[in-house]
Structure formats: structure tokens, C-alpha cells
Image 1: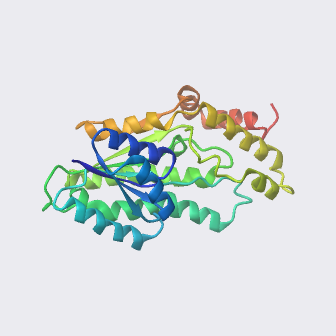
Image 2: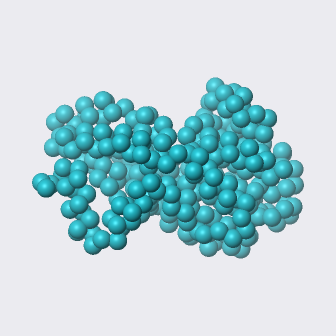
Image 3: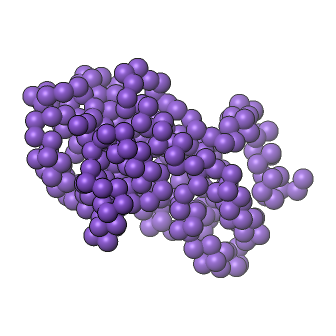
Length: 283
């Protein structure tokens, strides 16, 4: 049985990836942050789900989980590491705190670094292990190539993840470990519902951004309804693990044409289109 580590497996994309892989015969080691989620997900996904209790920002806890996985793998390689755990920090740069920025990077960038480095030997950097080298799949976003107002912190983390993935892919060719990026557009996940929208708007009571920020938060509700389902992303992850030859990056975007157009247009033109749509300048 092939084994895969999935971070952030308690909800959303990570949960669905875990569910899909288990349905296709994989054993999934899934990270959760508390015992309650460990019990719930284990009962829902069955015996081939093995919970790993750690937060990706806790380097020591991540390293401790490697021993648990290694003991169960015995001398086999890990077939895959899916770096999925992530958060989204929203807000105008003028109003965000340094702590909020730092937390965004701690989860979305340092968390990926911690897990990648810790699991590298199990994936095949330790050549004494039996089996084919595994794959690292990093869940990025279209926000890794398209910057939007009020998403500077999130954009920085995903742009950084894209660069990290490209460097890592070339570096790990030494061991035969491949690195693939999956970049979804809007997804129907709890990432939007976790945001305290009332509290966030209140922070902007005396800000010039209040009106447009409120509009942006309303826009996220629309994106959630029109986004792709986690099942689509999980199916793509499954196919990447199953195939020998894959692309280096997969974009999964329900608004593909619109977003590709924005990346292809001259920057100033794209600036004006986005600003007009969001009410940052007059139409």
C-alpha cells in the first residue's frame, strides 16, 4: 500500500484529498491540530487514515511526526507529501499589523518549508529506502501569479510558494523527487467562512478603505459560490501521484479566462480594470 502525508486534512481541500486518496487505495497520514479533529476525521475516513497531531508552524512537532510515519513505513519510501495547510490574511496593507503578516508567512511558507525538509528523507533523499522516490505537491493558488487589492499578505505567501517550488523541483532532481504545483482559483471551502467579516469591517470604520473593503468581502461570498469543488482538486492530486510524467504546474480555475486575461494585459490596464470593478477609482 502506498502512503502519503497530507497537511491540513481536517477540512476543505485537505480533507477531500485525504478522502479521495483513501478511496483509491492509499494510506493517508493527515495532519490535524487537535485531538477532536483527529477522532472525527479518523471515524469518517476509516482505518487507512492515520492522524498526525501537529501545527505546520511548530517545527519540533512536525519533526516528531516523521518518526511516527517512518515507523509505520518501515523501510519503504513515502509516495507523496501534499503541502496543503494554509490560511488567508485579508486587509489593506495600511491597516494590517506586522503580526498578521508574519502569521501568514509562518503558515503558508515556513510551514511548507518545515514539512518539506522534515519528510525529505522518507520521500527518497535517504537512498537506503526501498521504493520509487515520492512526489511533493504544493497547493498554491492563482494568487501566486495575480495580485489583488486587500490580499497583499496572501499574494506574497503564494508568490513565494511558487518560487520555492520551482527552486526545490530543480534541487531535488538529485534524488528523483518531483515537485508539482496545483494552483486553484476560488474554491468552495471554509477558508472564507473562517473570516470574521463583521469584526474586519469594524476595523475600517475610520479608514478610507471601508467602503471598498466591505465590497471586497461581499465579493468573497460570490467567489465561494462560483468556485470549483474540492473534489476537482483532489482528483488532480490523485492523477499527479498516479502518473509518471506530469506537468510542473496545474491551474484549476472556474474564472480561468478572466484571470488569464488580467495576467496577459499590460499592467496599467489590468490595474484600472480591477480598481474600477472594486470601486477604488471611478468608472
